Image (cartoon, rainbow, N blue to C red; front, side, top):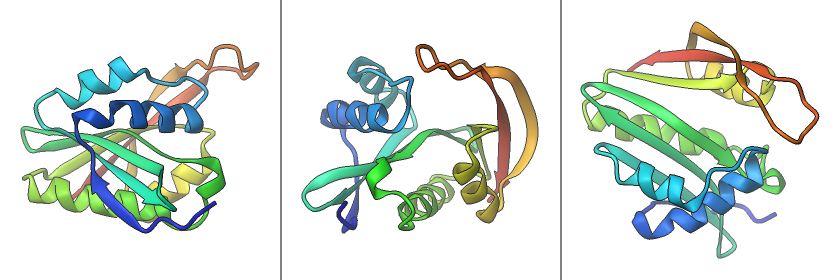
Length: 153
């Protein structure tokens, strides 16, 4: 439960760290191979938040053709509610704008109240819905719709 001290760019060698963070944040964890493949895509980049000598949060984006998509973002449960999500999001949006993106998209589970509040505070607005998009297996939770959100930079 350490306060994050810095945000740093993730490299291809950080796929293991990103997969571990994703697994700590979400029931349906992405693998090391998933992160390695995503980081190899043109325009893909990630930021890792570190605190107390360990990774505590991340954001993964892809900017192509004037658009950016936030592919995933998470903060370890023990490190939430300290403004880290906002810091990661702000930095990702600034870097997307520097890369020439004019619009940012993301998908978020309709029942992820904290994330929705974060995105709405940042100015995102709902532009679509994907019915039963999130289907967590082995959790006993029902499928949840995804809201498609957009922010014009």
